[in-house]
Length: 338
Ligand code: FAQ
Image 1 (tube, rainbow, N blue to C red):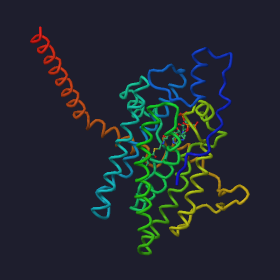
Image 2 (image 1 turned 120 degrees about the horizontal axis):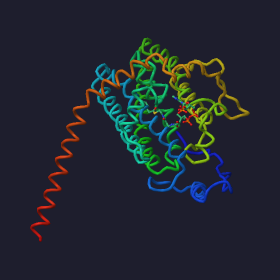
Image 3 (image 1 turned 90 degrees about the vertical axis):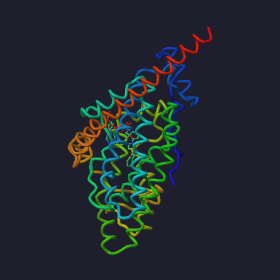
Image 4 (image 1 turned 180 degrees about the horizontal axis):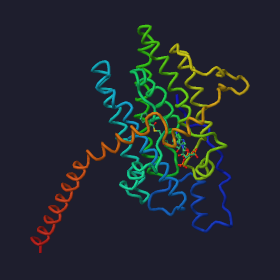
């Protein structure tokens, strides 16, 4: 359903005389589609771009646990509760792989988390919207995970090895998440008239924020050109958004739901759906901290971090004791052998 095709042309990556020999060698490796690994030479701006993107991605996963987490106790059956619990745990796991991938670039996790808690680091705009009904849990799986997969499958081929490898497992899990969301919505639309209305109302609230997840239009995107030249980004924001719309409209038709866009129609000349203007004012308001739930989300993250402090301290003390015991045992065995 979600493809990796449509690579951007990176053949223009320069082997320019203004580059140092290290930069030329790096650019040649990128042009050959080789993976860059943590101990390899890389330009500082490549490193900082990756730290920015991977850490924002990690923050999005852990903040993304919150809108659904509140529904674990309210899921309508034991089966739905088990599935949702597993999904939210997966998101926590994705955050951990991604923080670990960012740490391979020489940054420490505590700094990244401090940047999130102090409001210096971004996370995905989508997680600042409230989950008002059970249908919203279906919409998050169907639309938000669907958009996440569309964006993340190409990242499995990102030029930075640890990020690309983390994305492979993440995408497999996101695929399960998308299917469970579609299943919730599919069940609702086959239910009572109230359940169908709940699904339609939820789609109306989530559609435009989901399209915003892909980021600003290419002409307004600060990072796309350079991230593409470095093989970090493989498909632009607008192209991914278009692919998402093209895949999702037939799914909505199958579900009997109406996408809230009067300008949405198939364009046979382009071979794509045309869609209406995205409310970018709302997007930037949310990104700058003034969305419906920004303050609530950050307060919940900080509270969870503080409440987990004793667990981290206990784990660190246990690891220090285990290291000391292993060191003492190794000295004793060397003495016995001497
Ligand atoms: N929200 O120049 P660009 C998920 C910022 S994970 C907030 O186009 P770039 C799983 C951008 O940072 C969802 N800010 O930037 C899940 C930049 O600001 P900066 C997260 C946004 O990096 C599902 C500025 O705008 N996925 O959903 C957003 O080339 C369900 C200019 O933008 C990832 O992070 C936004 N939506 O492209 C979990 C994937 N869009 O940093 C729970 C990896 C843009 O200069 C439940 N990231 N901005 O201050 C990416 O692919 C890219 O970073 C983009 C943005 C495509 C998100």
